[in-house]
Image (tube, rainbow, N blue to C red):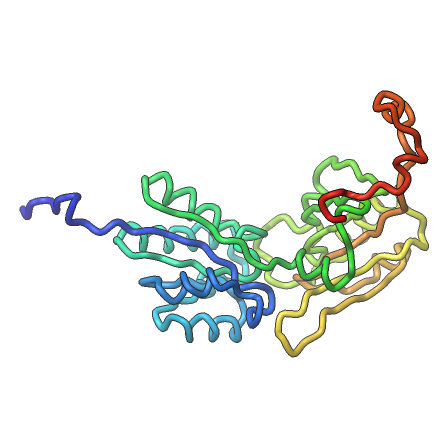
Length: 281
């Protein structure tokens, strides 16, 4: 039996998770590009051949994780297998980079799981920020989340759980094309409209039927434009969203001032009526 290799001679693997941005070209940070270029191996969860080409051109030793997706297979299983593949490469002593579409920590289960597993082994792992769909949404729609406040949910969780909507805040509801889908095995949005109808019914409890909503999709290629469709709440149940459609429900406006709180602070309504966050003045 061969003797165990001494710890001082064994190579310690590491992991860095990066995001490629939504449209990849122009949205990949310099830090992400550097880690991709210098990794021993790069795993790609990009779901976009153009994005994969960009990453592979930076590091030829790049491997797609898309082969783990299968129609009818639970995405929970797929995500676990993705994490396992990444972690195995780290355990083998490689400096691993995993590149995911958008922000690597937003709607990316395997990135968080891989970091958790690697850190549990006492090895180095960290995540870099990236341009997310929300960042694109804010820019494309001209929304400032600080103006009215913002509530953000995944569509199915929004239906399944007892959330409390504040109609004075902007609502962002992700993946409405899968609203009500609980099997985690659907890879397209061609399913029953019952989830979307329920979503519309819930919103109708808080907003008038003629409240204007926005169905949004970020541009995934530099040559494309974002998809921005305005619909009335009463029309929402007839919409045909895709897997990447996001619903934005604009605020009803500012709520009334809490006079009791102003009084405790020694302020009047007139003093604070033009208040703006001093950090952005």
